Length: 133
Image (cartoon, rainbow, N blue to C red; front, side, top):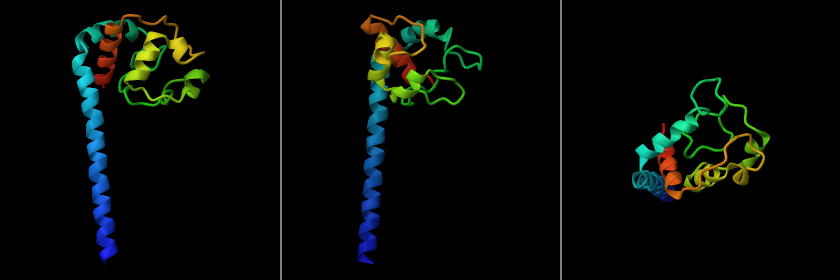
């Protein structure tokens, strides 16, 4: 009986810690989005939307919900072998690196985009992608 109570207590503690960790991740993402100019990021994103639409006939996958998603994970899009092998999670650092220079971050991907040099523009676009659901 005592071992069962201890196990239940440990399970409860682990759940509380997991929820706390999840809350910290969400808070960190939210603070990044707040420090970025999300409206400016949305305006910059319009150039991306030419290829990254929600329609089935788009040139690129939809970017809704991209933050936190694994690369090559959407089932409704045919990714390049390079993107399927990339094994990335689209967090702030990976998104910034990819948008800055897609061919360096994922060599051999099919995205015909030269990248963005301006650090503030990168921050704003990533801030917008973080809230794009």
